[in-house]
Image (cartoon, rainbow, N blue to C red; front, side):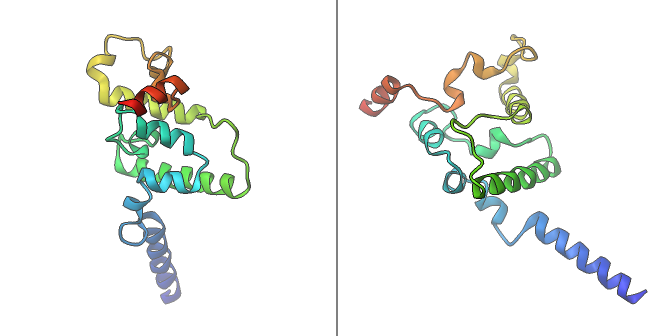
Length: 150
């Protein structure tokens, strides 16, 4: 009985460590600077930095569920593990695209933040970035040149 108690306690401690990590690990791994270090996201990060649009946000504000803390942390773990494996094994596509699940998450976050404007638009039949193309982190060469001149 004592061994079972120790095993449960050790398992709980391990789950808490894995779920919340050392101090500040969740915060540090949520920064755009962290995201760009291990992903082939240089172009997307560059476009995000050069655009005033959403520059005050972090990647996780749009790309992870933000409807509750548990859902956010669960998907942060799932997506982070997937990204780590795919990056390590060289399985990242070129160009990088968003998955169906990721698109649903991003769309939900657009509507969550811009609900007052989005209420006038049918957001179930098309993604916000089908009209707001700069949100997809692609800056046309001429647009880049104009931004740099400002």
